[in-house]
Structures are given as structure tokens and as C-alpha cells.
Length: 445
Image (cartoon, rainbow, N blue to C red):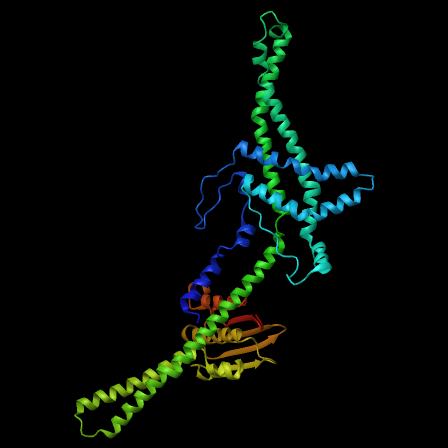
């Protein structure tokens, strides 16, 4: 059984975008550039930049991945070129796993694995065909064929520059170790030694920035080409959230129906039995004192009033006529009970989803209550039509107008109730009237 508190927790989780691995991957910013990441509570902390040594290790560990491109370049124009391309395609998944491990261990980047290309029961050529038709396969192939080797070559060059910078910074020291009469310690040679040392110091400070830029470029390329396609994953996640939201709405509607049945079959029946017994006592007991009879009469009247209130409450939770006879009959009942004349026009060729029927019923019921309470209208026109795959409800009153959802009067709640099933609510209410409320709901969720 789904409890109200559990439904509340589910709704709150959906509203906040509950922590989900795919959502974290899809909405995570590239904090490698030094921006401060945020906690689940939105607090920002000081950025933690990877050290230059760690970035250098990440770049150095990627140098061996230049091998696929080097092999293809070496085999260009020979009979081995085709087999090498096929071999690289076969090894794509294995190379991707190695790259994920490298980026996780040295780059602090967790790249989720792509979803299965086909159900587990699909085997053989059909599975291979599905794998070859998947765009993520060719993104990974392009990464291992072009992006990774190019980054590896740039990383090798940057590391060579860093090593050369370390060597150049020691030139002046080696010159001072030479004998005093040596040409290295005098004249233009000494000036060259100083210049080389200065260049080495400058490169020594600039190369870590170059390595850091290459490391960030590697992370971004890996996120774009090795991970799941963000557009597809976002679309899939939106579909999952829509299904989850529909499930929550259906569960809430089922909970209202259960409460309605419990009240109708339980508390209401007990109150009816109590009222009958009090009415019987009121008619048959003749030898009681006037004070006792007055108490019995008051108790009988209170029980009857409680039955009326409970019936209204049950009808407000989920009217039985809505489930049995549909929206047309349920709206006819609302129009008949309204404190002002309501001209009802309903044209529904087919019944819509039960949850949408319930939302439409409650929106109309609350809108009529607002009209009776605030609009000072003399009549209301209510039209319900099915237009394509949408349920269109138009309610017009001849009241004083001036309805503003920002000032309350229940209109904001009506808009939220319509939005719970991907519906819309528009209000046109100039001063002096008339007020027109237009609600559009999907016929199916």
C-alpha cells in the first residue's frame, strides 16, 4: 500500500531532481577549469585544482594510446591498412575501458558506461549489427583513431619541452663548474648561458599550464566521445521522469479512491447507523425527561449534519459517478449543485484517462467555487471539448472580473493541479468582466 508520506517523499525527490547517476553525469559542470563544485544543498566550496605532477602523469599515461594512429600511418598504402582498421574497431571497447581507468585513477573523472546496445537475449550477427549501428561505437572509434593519438602527441611534445626546460635551467650552473679560464665562463658564451637559463626557467613555469590545458582538453574530449550521448541520455531521462511523475499522480489518485471507499464503507455507514438509532430513540422514547430528549434531538441533528459533511468530503475526494459514468455525468452533478446557474456543454467522443478525468473534475469544481465566492456572477458557461489529443475546458462567468492568480483566490492552485498532468491553465479577467478560464489537459498520460 502506498502511504501519503511515501507519495510526499517521491514528489519531493522528483521536484528536486533526486540524486541519480545519469542526472549527476548529465548536469555536472566541467569543474576541471577551477570552478567551485556545489554540494547537494547548493553550497560551494573552494576549488581543488589537480597538481601539476598529477596532470603530467595523466598526460604521460595517454602517450601509449598514440599507437593506433601510428600503426595506421605505417600501414597506409599497404595491404595491412584494412586489417588494422578492423582490429582497431574490434578493440574499441577494450581501449575505452583502459581510457576510463586512466581518467578515473589520474584525472578524477568518472565516465559512466554506455547503455547496452541490445537486449541480453539478442545474440550473434543481430547484436553485432546493433553494435555497429550505434552512434556511440563510432564516437569511441573516432576518439581512439584521432582525438586520443593527437592529444598523446601533443602531450609527448609538452613533456619533452618540460624536460628540456629542466635541462636549460641547469646550463648556468654547469658553466660555473668550468675552469676560470674557460671560454664558457666569459664573453658571449656567458651571455648565452644566462639567456638559456632564463628561457629554461620561463618554460619551467609555463609548461605546467600547457600540461594542465592538455589534461582539461583530454577530459572534455573523453566526456564528449567516450561517455553516453548527453542529448540522448537527457531525452531518455525526461521520459523516465515523465513516467515516474505519471506513476506518482496515478498513485495519488488511487490513494484518494481508497480513502473515499474507506470513508464511504466505514465511517459513513457508522454515522448512518448512529443517526438511525438516535432517530428511533427520538420517536419511541416518550418517558424521558425534557432535558434528555433535548440531548437526543441535538445528537440526532448533529449526526445528520455530520453525514452531509462526510458525503461532501467523500464526493470531493473522488466522486463515484466520475468512475462509473465518466466526466460528463460528474460535471452535470457539479453544475446541478452550483449556487448559480451553469450552462453546461460537454462533447467527449471517448473517455479520457482516469487521472485526467479526476484533474478536470477538481479543476472545474474549484473554479466554480471560486466564481461563487469571488466573482459576484449571475451565470456561468462551461464548455468541455476534446480537440485532437487534448481536453479543452472553457469556463466563462459574467462577474466583476479582476481575477489575478498572484493574489491567491485559488487560481494558483488550479494552475498547479493542471500542470501535474502536463496541462495548462490560462486566465483572462479584465476589470468589469467577463472572466474566462481556459484549461487544456492531455487525454492520455
